[in-house]
Image (tube, rainbow, N blue to C red; front, side):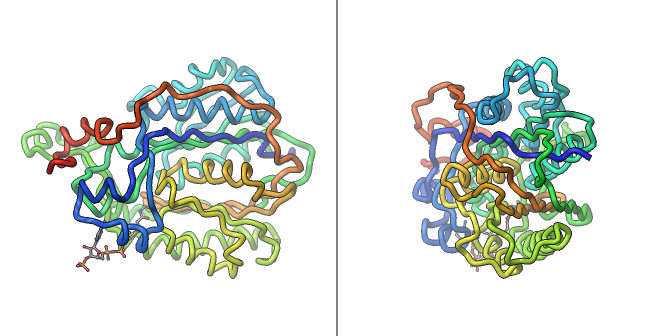
Length: 362
Ligand code: COA
C-alpha cells in the first residue's frame, strides 16, 4: 500500500474580532468567567460565507504543497455550516479554486469533522483511489449562535484550515485512527429546526429561531472521556509509547477539556498546542488551523509524531496518530485573500441581532 503525507497546510481567519469585553455588552457574562472557565479571550466573526473561508485556506494549502488546483483529485470539506443545503460547500470550493479535475464532497461530523475527513482522505490515498486530496475544515458557526444565550455565545468562532494529503513512498503518515459516535446523545448539542424533520409552519408561528443549543456540562463530561480514550487508543495502535508523542493538537473547545486529554496521555504541557484564547471553538476548522499555526511557529519538527483528537455534536469523536513528513516548510505562498471589511464587529452582527434579538443596546 502507498503511504500518505500531509504536504501542504493553510488557514484563513476572518479579520473581525469579538472580544470577551464585547460579549459583556451582549449577555450577562464577564471576561473573568469566560477566561477561567474556557480559556477563550476572543474569537473571529466572518463577513463571508463558509465556502469563501474554505477557498482561501485551500489556495494557501495548495501553494504550501507546491500544487496547482487542477492537480488535486478530491476536495473534501468538513463543515456543519455550509453556505446552503445543496450544492455541497465542497462543490462551491472546487469551482472557486479551479480544481477542475477533482471530485467534491462535504463531510459533517460537526467538530470532529476534519479528523473524519483527514482519516478518510488518507485511507483513499493509501488505497490508491486518489493521489492527492485537499482536506478542508471550514465553519461559520456564529451564524447559528444566539448572542442572547450565554451558554453558547461565548464559545464559538469562525474560520477555516486546510491540508493537502498526497501519496508518498516515504514512511510515516497516518499510523492510527479512531472514529466514534453516540447518537443517543444528539440532543446535548444540536440545531433543531435546521433540517427536514422541521415543521416549518409551526417554527415560524412560534417565532422559534434556528440556533445551536447545548447542554454544556453534559457535553463536557462526555468530551473528556471520549477524546482521552480515542487519543490513548491511537497512540497504542501506532505502536508508540506515550513518551514518543511529540505534540498533541487537540480540538479547542475548552482549555479544561484540553488539559484533561493531555493528562490522560501523561503529556508534558509543553507538548500540547493551544490557541483557544485567540479563536475559541471553530468546530471542524479548529484542528487544521491549529496544525498550520503549529507549523508556522516551528512547533512541528520533521518526522514529528502528532496526536490529533476531537469531539463534537453527534456526539462524535475522533483521533489520529500521524507521523509528519520530512518537510515542515511550505513550498510556496498564495496571495489569496478574503475581501476587505471594516472590522466593526457589532455592525457585522446586526443581522444576527435582528434575527435572534439582543445586541449592544439590549
Ligand atoms: N458567563 C457567566 N456565567 C455563566 C456563563 C457565562 N457565559 N455560562 C454559564 N454561567 C453560569 C451558570 O449559569 C452557572 O451559574 P450558577 O452556578 O449560578 O447556576 C455557572 O456559571 C456554572 O455553569 P455551568 O454550565 O455548570 O459551567 P461550566 O463550568 O460547565 O462551563 C461551559 C460551561 C459551556 C464552558 C462548559 O460546560 C463546556 O465547555 N462544556 C463543553 C462545551 C463544548 O465543548 N461544546 C462544544 C463541543 S465541540
